[in-house]
Structures are given as C-alpha cells and as structure tokens.
Image (spheres, rainbow, N blue to C red):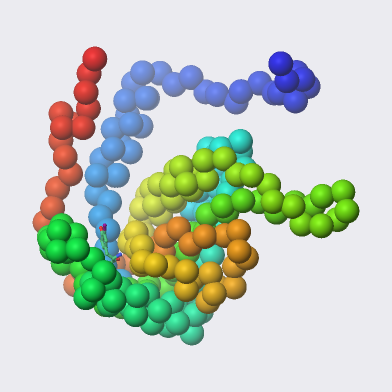
Length: 226
Ligand code: IYR
C-alpha cells in the first residue's frame, strides 16, 4: 500500500443529474460538428488557444503518468515549407506506389491526394512526438533509458484531448499522418527517443472550405448492450 502522505483527497464536484445532462448534451452537440478540414485560411490564431489546448492534452491519463509526449508548435514559414515539401515527397511516393488499390479505394470518398498545401496555409502546425522511452541518469552520470509503458495508447488519448480542445475553441484541424514521417525528427531536430506521431495543421477554415459528405456510424452500430 503506498504511503498515505503521498495521496490527497480527490477534487470532485458532484453535479445534479440535470446539470450532467445539460453538459453532456452541449458537449455532444458541439463535438458532432467537428470535421477534418483540408483547406485553411492563413488568418492568425491567438497563440493562447494553442497553448491551452496543449495544456488540455497534457492533462490526459498516461501509462504510469509518464506523459510520453512532446508537442512541437510550428509557426515559422520556412519550417512549414520544409515540412510540406518532405511530406509531399513521401505522400507522392505513397499515393503513386506504396498504397494498395484497396487503400486508395477506401480514401476515394475523402478526396485526398499527395498535395498538402494546408501545411503551409495553416498558421500553426502541431507535430506530436511519442517518447518511446525516457532518458534518465545512472549512478555514473551516464544517460540511461527509462522504460515507458503504453506510450502509443497514452499519446493517442492525449491527441484526442487536443483535437477536442482545439475544436471547442472554434479552430479547425486536420489529423495528418504522412508516411513514413521520420523526416520530422530531422527537420525539427528531435532526439532519438522521440517518434513522430501525427501532424496537426490548426487554424480557421478557408472561406471556400468544403468537406466530404460522409457520416458517422449510428449509436446502434457502435454500442453493444449486454
Ligand atoms: N497519409 C495520407 C493518406 C491518408 C490515409 C488515411 I487512413 C486517411 O484517413 C487519410 C489520408 C494522407 O495524409 O493523405
């Protein structure tokens, strides 16, 4: 049993059922409006919105509370240009040679291709890195690897929090996974324990932005009652 002194009372407010329903209804209504956006305006976004959303992401649960994530917020035009160029080079190869006909068919309704102008158009691109292991010191002062537990799951949860927070703040996002994305480690000069996880352009949608007319599964399709 852990030492009691290392614990504190849970800060928890019990809500009335009416308030629970009100909040959950409002959150659901807002979240159902979230769409992946591929056309961005270059209009500036208050950086505080980005910082707060990353604080929300950083509050996510993680394996052994190791918080195995790094969020690189890119606004520098030259860095965005280099990321776009490298992403497009990989994506062109993927779309033209690496992706199976089955995969390409699955993406057909989304209308995606190798071109990624949103990486330069969006005022911010958040590149999320997963820390596959931590770096500590042994008794001799040398670097020592610290095992990270469930880092994939942990970062996935944090990214979910991040996308929700950005959306609730009135910002548009795209969950972009160029493949392979090792180029991000190099361009952003991240250490070897950090693996690129996802690239998230963030901003206001372009005035002419359109989205595919696709829908989500119904509750009955995703919820089993036993
Ligand atoms: N990574 C590519 C292809 C792509 C793959 C999936 I799965 C998508 O849902 C969308 C795109 C790209 O970003 O275009």
